[in-house]
Image 1 (cartoon, helix red, strand yellow):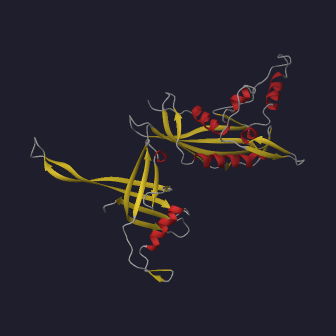
Image 2: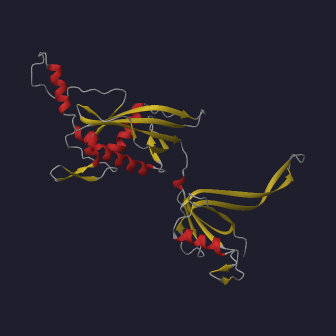
Image 3: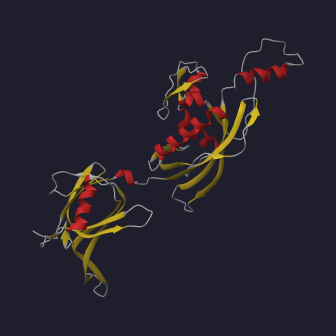
Length: 344
């Protein structure tokens, strides 16, 4: 079955990310413990320079909703329901309980789906519009930035309405200033917004499923490679032969196999990338630090260790090509091409 994400689903998703189980904890009056792995403790300083420790998500107190939200009666009435001021009193009572809240409208803006009957994949764009007190805006900006960094590039397992898990990526945008501050029943208030994108694919492997490590010391010590892209190929050498029952048809028989690996990475200041950088510059150099170089072994052994699906594979390779792309006002991009070691 195709996954269905409604506006309510998106609201529940972003609320869980921001607040954890804050709403359930408040509704239970503390019988349910508040848990929020994304939040943190902050220190608030009032006008008398008194410091108070608060949970960040609790302090922001963002109430998420979709479609529509209004102030309603939230408590027991202690007055005559027939009074002509009953509705006004309801509003005041609800307002007093809402003064410390911020509000967030979650809207589903667009959805791009893969036009396939058996591939369950889509990219959903949504928008969150915050109505928040001006004195909280810096904390909200910090929290949004922290959440964006926490979820960037990390695969999430999201359950659809049929109980099936989907591999997904969540990208949270930055806060956008919508309008000038204005006075409201909540005090001086600001309206800011952000977009977030949810993309998912059923039964799909992702980058983090595979761990890649390299060793330049004959496989003694392996270091994880901080790569941005890896392309690996198994290349079979085949010979044409006639088939047994139909000699007029040509088949193929594989005789040898080679594996090529192409790794792309930034020029990080790490021990492994520094060692590769030294190889790149020193191997073809005519002189190093004023000293004339001598012939060197160009068959440089590189051991590659791949951990995947509970198995560990080790390959002994030789460097086929090294490349360093340097662009003014940009980061250096390096690439390393490896092939199976052919020496005895």
